[in-house]
Length: 249
Image (tube, rainbow, N blue to C red; front, side, top):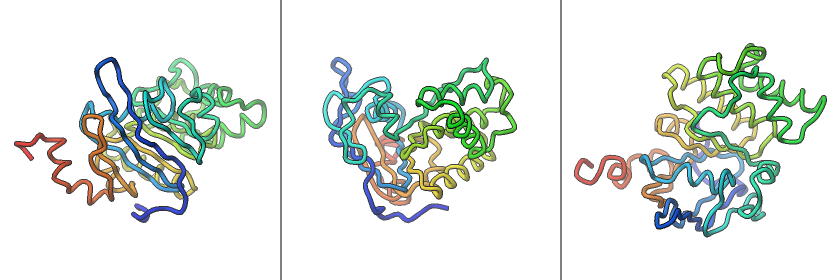
C-alpha cells in the first residue's frame, strides 16, 4: 500500500528552523523539514516531544513560531492568520474531537463549508462529496455526538476535505481505534493519497505509519532526531532510546 520511499517531484511545504518558546521552555527547537507533493510524511515521538506544537506552528492554530519560517508552495505563511493559511489549501485536524455533538453530521459539514467561504450549491456539493469520500453518508442525519468513534474521526477528515486542501495534517487520527477500525482508516488515507492529496500525519500507532508513510521523522524533546524511510527510522537505536530511555534501549 505504501508508495515510493524517495523524494517526490515537487516540494509543497518547507519548514525552516522553526522554534517556539513558552517563557523559559523551548517546546520546538530549530526544526526543519519538507513535504513533497503527493507523499505521506509521518511524525512520531514520545509524549511531550513537540509534535502537536509543530502542527500548531505550521497551521497557525492557535499560534505561529517564535523563530523560523514556514513556506507553503513557496509562499511564506508563518505570519498569516490561521483562516488565510487554511484557504491557501492547508488544513488540519486535532487529537480531541473538534465537532458540534448536538448538530447533525450534515450540519457539521455545513459549518465547515461556511468557514471556508462556500455558499449555496457549491457548499452542498462539496459537503456531499466529502461525506461520500470518507464513507459516512449513512450517518448524514444523525447527531455527531452519537455516531461511532471511527465515524467521528472520518467526520473531522470530511470537514477538512470540503476545502479541497492540497495538504491535510492529521493529529493522531488512529487514537482510540481498534485494529479493524485502524485498517479501515489506513485504507481511507491510502485512497486519499492516490487521489493526489498530500498528508502529514502525527501518530503513536507506529504500524500505521510503517504501512502508509513514504518517510518518517522522529521528534524528541522538541528537536528533530531522525528523518528517513519508516523501516530505517524505526530500527534506529536513537529512536529506541528516545522512546524507552537509554538504559532500556
